[in-house]
Picture 1 (cartoon, rainbow, N blue to C red):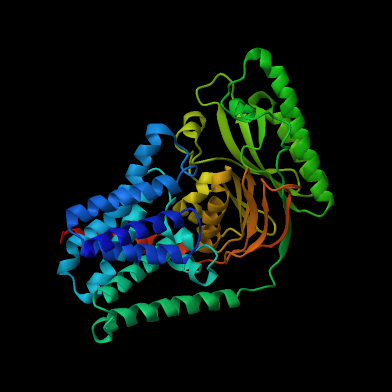
Picture 2 (picture 1 turned 180 degrees about the vertical axis):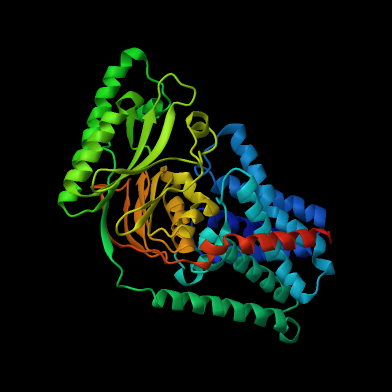
Length: 485
């Protein structure tokens, strides 16, 4: 009977972990991990690990459908890899737990969890997708920890809660036995939450602001899949003139819309990733039109655009071009991190340097979509003293909330306000403390233009200075733990 209860507890915990990766209810992951850890430490190593892999695979297979852009056998393989890395900290913990002291039994698991999660983000495709830290979006007093230790600090705290709860549970919650590790955790957690609350309450309100607008493409200009075929360079010679006619109408749409928003008071206008397409031979003429508009209306234009080189192996240049109010191009940045699969097969990759443009009043940095899923990459903006981070993005419906919520952490980590213009997703403006100042959904009816008064100015954070030091310390601890397996 006891083993059946453990099996059910493990299955419940795995389901909670899976659900939390799709539906952001912060407490789910805290207790789901504790349930799995309790069952794992109480079951035989081999049988328990095998069953844990199975239930984790099922939970992730269901929860990641539509989120992971893969199908067929590739999807099965990706889920298998994700399930394996997810259970690895539980397996290692199970192998060393019998040799641990009370404090070791509570600290070992979070060290291993953070190390595995961090190493996966660095060496396995997928960047930081799947980090448990992202499940805490919206809990502002906790997420301020990202400004000090990055998302690794948040993940550590969640895993540490699970191991502390499990230790207390396994000892019948006898206070004289569990007092020391529980008090250490409670005091640490309380200090972190208080520090987060103080950080938010002391946020200045007197910074200069910038009126920002984001635009989006017309929904009825292209038939489904047509923009994708153009991006791939899949345009027959006899179709080129007709396609170019549509692209010209698209150019007019964005330029006229930008002029409209400039007349309404916008000083920065941002276009989503790959939202405007132009054939390479027409790019110079289009940019001249954009520069002229920026100069005439005295606005910054941050244009997410795709330049198409027909007939070439890599036909797609995925760009973010920033034009200042005098009509000068401050930077023309190519996306540095293509999404594995389709995009990687057609895209010309950038130089992995976050562009930072210095203007008379601020420093503006830029990135494109998947770039912002790499904290160590975006850290260049914080380290470079950026006052604003512009992200041009292009999502799909299943990830529209999750992807925006992930990228909001980049603002907290680097102490920099973020404006995100998304095609097929959530366009938003976020301040350096992760507070959403404006948001619009591409899939909602009505006008999809986002208009926000965004305070400008960056605040150097510890994370922007030290980067993933905390995560690397956990990796070092992980190596030490492996010596005892």
